[in-house]
Image (cartoon, rainbow, N blue to C red; front, side, top):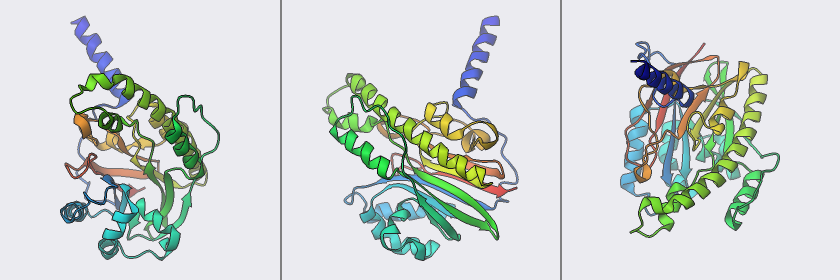
Length: 309
């Protein structure tokens, strides 16, 4: 009996630290919300696989959830142009995103009033030991413009929220698998997985430190903040702990606060991980959160509904 109690306490501790399994009582008032946010890594960089059937399925999911704010990741500019007329019909064209700034639409779509778009640059340096030439080039490009952007959305007259959305550096597990022969067993790639994870983690933690600085700046101005996207790490990691922060400017994890179960958002290569997140600050009240069961991408959409306190 004592041993069983010790095991339960130990498992409970690790579950709290790493937020593996969320257990919450559903809110009966979840239909009473101010705005709905969807983040989705659509894995649509390839123009060939971005077929009409893919597009129809994508918009079926968007119509079903009807998010007020839609955040995309891994949607190429070429594929975005193909669906821009449909997105405009849903959300309306945004004059502030014309010209070169059209690239912003890789991150945000909304029918709500939008202001104060920002693109960010990383500050400081990281140890680039063991980086190959492609990773060095990626790192220097990232310093010029990191893959996180922000904007403010008017969710009610005079009520604005600041949204940070993007895609942090992955650990390239799928890249490692594709570089191996088809007959190789997964364990043969362990040295390569570990190497890619170490490189990815180093860049991701560096990005998180920079994003946290931007979050603190927004919180210092009294703004309500949301961070959404493919953050490529799990709760309890250095990346998520850095982004969530501590003290009065700490952010909450939507799935841990309102979800139930594991909430896996990544299901590629037989893995089941929660890599996509929605983090939010005080001043916002979570009404509902769910992961959409979808095989359209190797990621699943994450949807949350909020009220403004």
